[in-house]
Length: 40
Image (cartoon, rainbow, N blue to C red; front, side):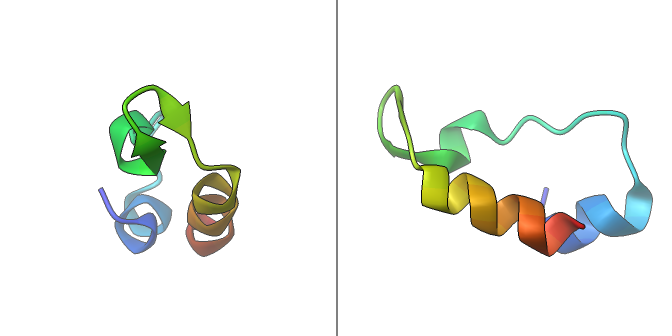
C-alpha cells in the first residue's frame, strides 16, 4: 500500500515491513520516516 493510499483509506494497520528494508532484516529509518511523513 502506498503512503497516499493509506492516508486516503485510513486502515487500522499497514504491513510495509519488507518494503522498508535495505537488506533482508535491515530496516531503513529514512524509508520509515519518509513513509510516515507521506501518510500523514
